[in-house]
Length: 470
Image (tube, rainbow, N blue to C red; front, side, top):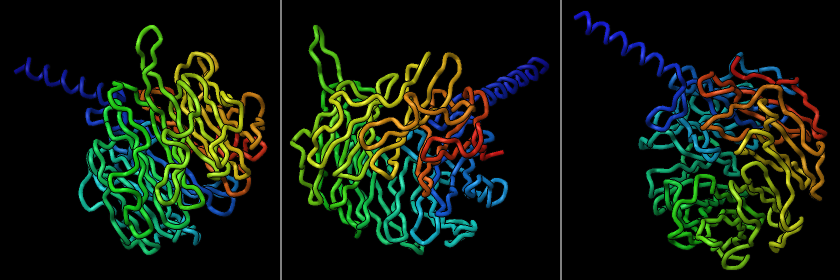
């Protein structure tokens, strides 16, 4: 009996150590004590509406807070609590919460709670316009972590997309009153990561890879119109075929944005075999313009942008001003395309971010600056010190915040195996919000921060920024 008691105590102690170490759980959820990077949108008065997480164990609680132009919290100490659940924890491709404004001075937030998706609409006082406990989006239970995206529908409502297994992508539209307008399922073959975008006409554009587990696969695109009808050819548009090229890694994301004519522009990395004394897998970056009717406009294969590219992104006022980004191991490059798909900046692109010393992976996020240029945030290392940096570049490729950008905060961004890029968005007054999670290691508790930066690159909310979960 004494040996049994001693054994039980040892097991309990071991369990406590495992519980405190912050290691990932076996079902794919984020590590204990870690949170994903928060996201923010402008509140229309030079302040921010921000969604963030607080994780005190194995569950992350989601909050929405409003900050005024000076950074003062307006919805209580922590804001409006939405509940606990797990968002997509996949290199910035998924969301733990998605924010969009409805055009009437309200904000809609979509979030997971356990194994279902919910939505709430809040006014500028933090009061619920829809039922206080939210409106359920997904009828059936879905797997965790929940991998989803949500965007405004252009008419005061919201469109949400989420993966239902490996072969179905569900989309649902709610109107301004929180009532379901339509629900549509897009069939896929082995759905992997996806991206969506919307336009002012209520259309939704989707891009995805059809083979999970980071292996080779085909890239597809599809359009769902404002009535929920699949608009482009049944079976979707095949943008590129990457069969039989083997393992290609996990930073081969694809993205899509809407143009102003009912069509879309897409960007992806195409795995290719390179014969250089031996066969190796390379990765070429391509872009494609698709018309409103689903016609391929930039050649059968698209426009070649760069070689040996990773983690592509696309922003801009398409199709006249499209900016494409890609990363190497330690640098980020950008290239601008005109409406015909012609390269505007130097062929190799411009170097816009550097990971710095003692870092072999760079994580970044981009947003338009409202004047034809862009702002980018990334993680940067100065020896053993790690910081978050930002840079603004104008439409002529001129760097506006110094040659190397500015340091966003003296607080180190979270840097570990589950790192996702810091988010950046316009503040509605010519400046920008940057949101990120901070923490030295997965064993340490991570916290959520937000910083406001003027259009000239001045830090407006202190040297550190504002901690949201204090």
